Amino acid sequence: MTTREQHTATVKASALELGFSFVGISDATKLDDAAVKLEQWLKQGHHGKMAYMENHFDKRVDPTRLVPGARSVVSLAYNYYTEERQEDPDAPKISRYAHGKDYHFVIKEKLKSLLQSLRSEIGDIHGRCFVDSAPVMERQWAEKSGL
Image 1 (cartoon, rainbow, N blue to C red):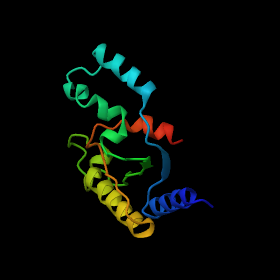
Image 2: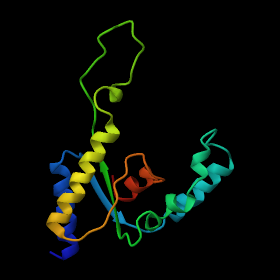
Image 3: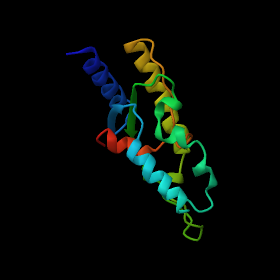
């Protein structure tokens, strides 16, 4: 088994151990096809009043702009479904994902644990953790990694 294969196995095993449902890894290359589609989408005004979608275009399509020297993008899926239900039938309806602790904090904590675990097992690696907090095209990366 090559070092790269060993590292891939370590990443996947560590992520699954932390409760992630799916793990995909892809090369950190520019998303050329997605860049064209995003540019067209923006020009057509499909982003409505979300002007922030026009910001950081280069970072959205090139992960090395977010993490200089990046060689891989790790995409993860985490099920934050809860059995909790609203008790007051007259209260406004709240989505289930909004019950309990904010999923941004839950998942970010797990991502930080994953990164720390990988540093312990693999060595000096660099990375950043994002949960809806950066101009990242999550769906495209997930698709590229096979998720």
